[in-house]
Length: 439
Image (cartoon, rainbow, N blue to C red):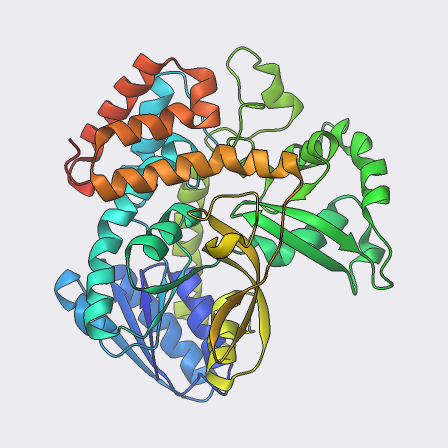
């Protein structure tokens, strides 16, 4: 069996996913093909994985493929393709995504999923994935494409609608949602055996049901605690608790992400909201800088002391592959096309995040039905942007980029249409060859 990892220079992540595969008897004898366009980072990943491989008994084979000219060989014959690329990296593209909008008075926190940053990131990522899809269709047409790259719904939605590649989008937030909430508000005693039901869209999937091990509804106690933590100046997870207060339900992704997915919290006319909700503006650039420095230190330590072992993580990828290979049922929160209206009050073209059963037949989404109307309405404000960004990538029409930005809740609430268009034009020019030519 062959497992190809695209963007293998994401060393911490490739260590988790491939390290997880080396923990699985069903996967550990695979050929692991690592692909990247950065030779130094690819070599760092090889070093780490060979150390894990040795610690785990020497199973499997690790191969490295550097550069676009070797991409097709990296993919050839693959059974699974894990995608974790970041087109344009922190420098220059993330810097551009934050600094250009800031000139127009538009502030962001993460900028990788929605907002103007998410739109631009989606466009440059799809520009590369079009070539990935063509190669996959040619050299490994039966492979499953496990996408971890953000913006999840935009990237996965494009692949699912406009390529023949079997694609599922995977995120970290579903499997930790309930535990994080209960831990945050000091309901630790309810974590063990907790049962939940989550559905919506990536980064804004709703915790529709949360029960303790005996089947008791935990929402009444959670809601009784909301005001206490919203009033606590030190508490960080306020946006999601505010969702509970105003929309009735908690959502999967962090408050710093969700602060920019709507028109409520980052408002130049209400600067006091930033402090009130503890919103970390420019958070993602800080994380990038800190992450690069941390990895440099960690890599030096690993070179000196070696890798002792790897404990299998909660990342979905290895569990999905194992489930398909062994035909053993496994449940995930997957990002899939809303075919046949899995969620009845969201459009069929949307990429939705719903419970899915995995087995030898692949990824099997479960029927959800209708979301609470206010939750569907919140999701639609994001889906509008996602669909228009995909349409821009498909048609190469600049007007659809304008429209995506105009309908983005945060951007549209802060800037007028002429300013939005001017900002988009400047971003397109600044990204240069990372984008195709839009007309």
